[in-house]
Image (cartoon, rainbow, N blue to C red; front, side, top):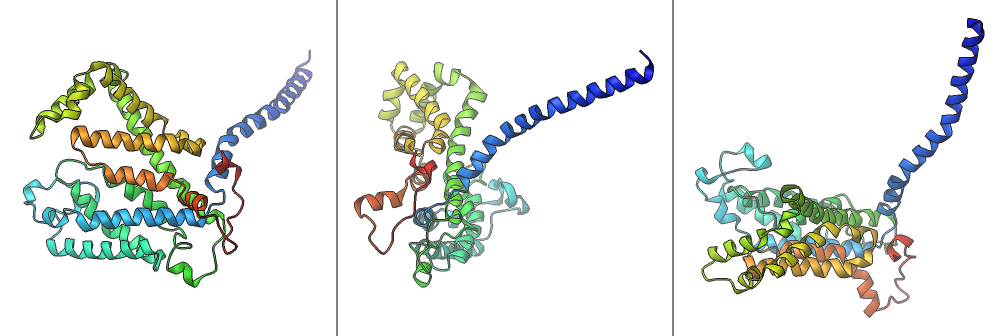
Length: 333
């Protein structure tokens, strides 16, 4: 075959091959877009402004309680030799002065209380978060990272730019009644993703560092024995589990199952009725056996994952003054 004809045939074959692969490429492109499109539809689906308000009230109320009883004045007078700063506190050579800490605590507490009742929410909520951030960082700047308040602060982040004061607030008394909309759904669902991710990555970290041995070995037993030994008196709850190998393995397996399975609540919201009590029981068990206080973390889970307006409507059906809009299919599952 002459070279010119052979070149023309090869060109036609390449063109035909290119056209043949275009539908396949388009199909793969559409398949790749399906998960992200579903996530986007779920995240930005319309939400009830009352649920966003309930999350605001719960999280800001928790923050106010923590700020009122926090150890910040004692931390402010710690010797510089004990200062082990994290994150932005590395800019300092010691803890903030007692005067600065007192001012931050008063500002954060006052703003948190105002955000809880919903007064000037668009200002007071970010102000409370910003003022509380260095105080919480102080608790983790003594050589050990304290996790209890981290989830609370992270769940507040999506509320900072949101319309969290559109319902159940003093601000709402001066505005028209808010109806379901996209602006009220994504902050709550983002906070749900934060909660689910916190537990999932905690379980994943256990598997990555220890593997199946975290469940199959005597790891949990020795942790409980060591915790009991460090307490003033032997801990009966820790020893009850540690003295029974089968029970210790079951506790370890249940812990991993709850943590790794927590993202399922995003797919099936009704699983919150199973996973939320399981998480609360897990934290209660840790508190009893190891004397570690994760109550704020447990309360954050309760505030974010429970549909409080649905409970209110169940016991007090909405009247003619406020009728909730249609519930998206994603929330009915």
